[in-house]
Length: 76
Length: 495
Image (cartoon, rainbow over all chains, first blue to last red):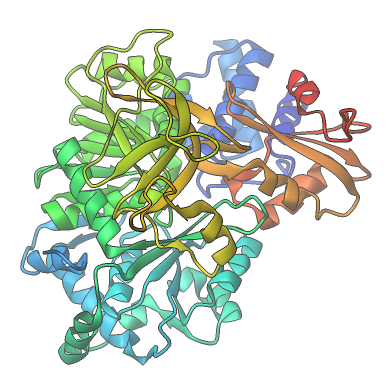
């Protein structure tokens, strides 16, 4: 699953090395239209619904954070 | 008669109310008056009349530094320090500024670009030179340039649109009237401060005595937090790009939180999706919604439409009637006047026309021309490149673009400029940039011996983030028409 998330992220922003990047939202690495694409693609791929409550910087600041979020939503 | 926008600040010189607020600081009218006059006095050492560039960040010091430059008798050219290095270099090269003003964050960058660099934090410590400030104002006229704002240009060179004090004041006065803004309002700023839409958030408070809150950029991707922030700051009025209203909606805004204070909403920059507007109307039934249309070249706008009904699916939102002091008319391709009810190019004249593109006579002369239908005297006009039609009620409809310019996330983007930048990348043979309007995604198809990661990185060195294609796809060769031109329609099918 981690690999699939990484693929989705890298496809949207090939210039970012998501294996090492942190502070993606906090440091404004990602723009709001990246987040829209990411939320859309993660939703389709894993059949999850990412609600606005989850759309906070902490959940999107790194690959690990996004993977955690997806795992949690799959299990809910 | 008002001659200089600084007069608005001066009316408030003793006003101790808050005028601007950012995440960390607040500042009163009186303090802005004091600090900007200090900055203006300090800049008297800049003898050259050319504009002063300002490279700075999203906070209140940027605003009083703009006003300080105006006090010194110079026009300011705002540049967001977050723009790619190459683009900043290109702007500086076109501008040939007399000096660069910057904040600490951008000091090293500014130093590399100019020998004449001033730090905002140093300038505010300078003593006010009353005599100098008075002498500057005596020499100024209302048609003097106030600022130069750069927008996307199709040849890879951005265009510096020059706006005068007079134009700015005409627009702000008309906008305040339409939106019914008064001193009790709190404006929520979304636009980057170097971008045209920010002029409202900067200058409306000076005119009306209201205040502006600069909303942190990262909140726009966290809808609940954005709304909490706006409720907390009691934001009552916004002038946002369409995408700033649609992004929170596509991220599920309004599910958990309502906006408690917002009641005046103006949107502009691109065509508003009806679904998005309907949702906003559902949640803010007592708010006024205004659709604004117009280019930077006519001081941010030219027409407005107050949405006086609940919108319904399939409806085409009107762009309405001209603002006060804007003359708007339609011309055919041969520049003759269109007949009643026909589609034509939207053209503008009046005191709100920009003075032209800075240091760019060629592009100025092709876009700003004399109205051929006025023969007894000279009337300057601007061709927007947009199609429009005046309906049976005398209201203007929008009918799209004539060229390859698109509106993406509230920004004006020339697809040619993306291709121009991509074509400089080593190993890339040919490319086509296309826009998927429904999904709001810019695509780049290319052929060549280079991977997409390299292209994305290279583009980020020269183009602002919003111009970078989010879908980059390598194909064996770009399909061609019989005449050798690229077959855009075949590629569009691939989107």
